[in-house]
Length: 112
Length: 113
Image 1 (tube, helix red, strand yellow):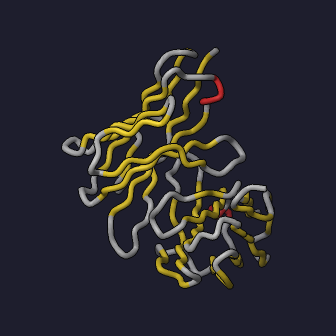
Image 2 (cartoon, each protein chain N blue to C red):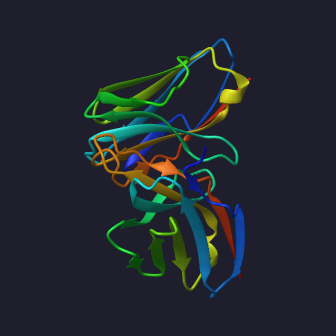
């Protein structure tokens, strides 16, 4: 079992749909992150949570809504997405914010 | 403006030879640097890190060098193996209450048998 688990692995959704990405970490870490990876672009940090509190929101559109109910779980709620939001969404966790991050396998999202 | 740059999108190396992956940064506040490896359909995996108080860190076949005056770091893999073929990301962070990792765009390494 990997330390950081993301579901689903693949998701295709229409622009009017509402869906959620789930992330769970089994490492006892205090910080969790959502990253977006688009083709040939750097990993873009979207949200940072430390001890279930959001500490950073990097100007992400409101159609992406994170939720961190506890230190082991992180969700990314999606609604009315655009085709350009199609990307690989990666969840990560670390002991503290800024230390070595452990990544999940990602969710490949396609918006049609 | 990218604060962490990997100017070579790809690199091919013969098996057994040395692979050198380069990374440049612009933010002088960065004091912690990491390398990650990523296989297709998987998330990045942490490889090795270095603090700005050091100029070299070695772990098995992997060595990271840091040149603070040039704002440059490099990852050396020797000897290179076909299983090292992956995308390598450089990342950096700065001290502070909201230390975050800033990633480069990655370099695809192909090790030829």
